[in-house]
Length: 208
Image (cartoon, rainbow, N blue to C red):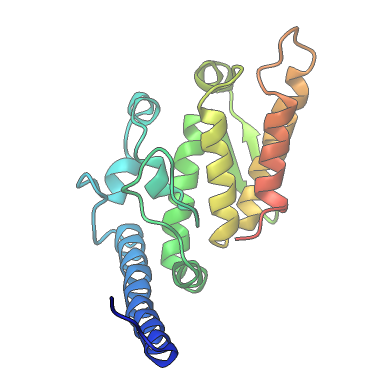
């Protein structure tokens, strides 16, 4: 039987802590490198796809593929759908907020999904998102009860909020609120009260 003194135990704990901290820092740095590399256009995602390629996909591909959105719209928590997607950390959030080219690339991602949803963005004095004349056709893909795009939208809203595009997030939410209100006259509304509450929290209540 081997015994250790309190001093040896404490020394072991300190050694373990000192070993873990650099490892944690390395993981954080690696995540930041992947995020910035992808959003600057220099590096691909886990499947070898570059940002500009995904932004140019047709609508049917955006709807059918499910492991790209976690790269386009990053969050501080791991994804339950795509374990290979990087996780936002404080360093990467600060990087986005101080580099206009990263915010512009995120804005392009936002505009692409607005087109997918049949919406358009007016960048006048106050940003406004409105329905296009093609909205009826586009809405068949996502304006339906329990649609998976409702979760996508929540992710988009929160990501925009985390990475400095708060005005775009608010404008998008205001448009979604109008769509929600128009659905309430239907026998079975396509957007539930629970969904609009989640969207509202993603814009206003959740701190990154």
